Length: 453
Image (cartoon, rainbow, N blue to C red; front, side, top):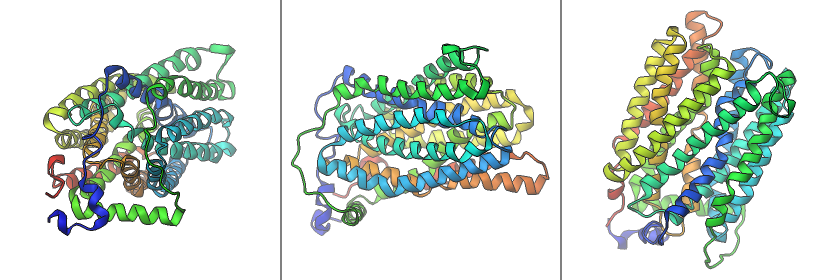
């Protein structure tokens, strides 16, 4: 195909990428940019993965199977809203030139949603209150992530985007360990913690949610000191229906001139959903299947984040050398193997989970960071928000898969074994998604071969 045969709407796709025209940056700006990942990590690490989700699926709210299934349903519904909103809101950020302003507002809202989880008391009646607040927070977090990803061209070039993306993810993981340990030793582990808080009425967990909100407000300040909305010609506002039409035109333009970019979006949708499943249900498996206490889960989370942070930064440098596709395939292949081993060896108890679970954390972050850097290398100038919005949408269109298959395989396990607790069967659902992502990613061309000449 030649440029002359490309539809008119696709001409912008054939122009320079955002990284091609990226200006000079500095180590200080990269570090400040990475502080957003550090500052917003409590929602992912403390709330979604290791503390609040474990609290919400505890016996205080119902049986293990019922609360786990309810969490899976709420996660799927939140994913649907992200799928519908992400590309349109990302496109509107591009059109208005207010990406950073929107990111700032969404970050503050995320902090407020985190703190609001304080109201969730350890009673069955509060299960769906907690799930609703968690779901809304997840939507806000994802949309904010779209705008954050869209700013990567302010701090990276085509030659450094792998290590910059890996650094950001790594900062998130390392921020996660600091906040986990702080909450554990100051509030959760002591009989009487900071501010005189005890575990009566789960006040140690609930007060931790307030501190998560404060953490987000404080530690994202450096990012907003260096990230700036770039002056650009304002375009007329459009309605919701027209926004979706414009998104569709962008997809058809990509299909016309960069078909393997569309293939990548589809492949990454699968494996990113599997990666999200590893984090969403990993701590739940640790407690419900392998018998780790709430304190054990937090210590595991701390160790996991150290390993994940360092591994992601290391793989980020490898990304710039061997390319993001190879990093993704290495990571996914390793995760599939380790997930199967966890299922097969689940009777081995805590030791099995500690060893294999920590090994899994080596590969989750690199796959996520390499996926972001892969797409960042392809985005046309001025399309960051919209394309990263599509990235979020394609991921969320199938985001029901991991929660659904996790719950489905729990049910299959109960039917096959007749046991009351078959939560460990859920890992097979996550492994299936990761394996599918690996298979679809294999034929996707390297990022250097995506565009027609």
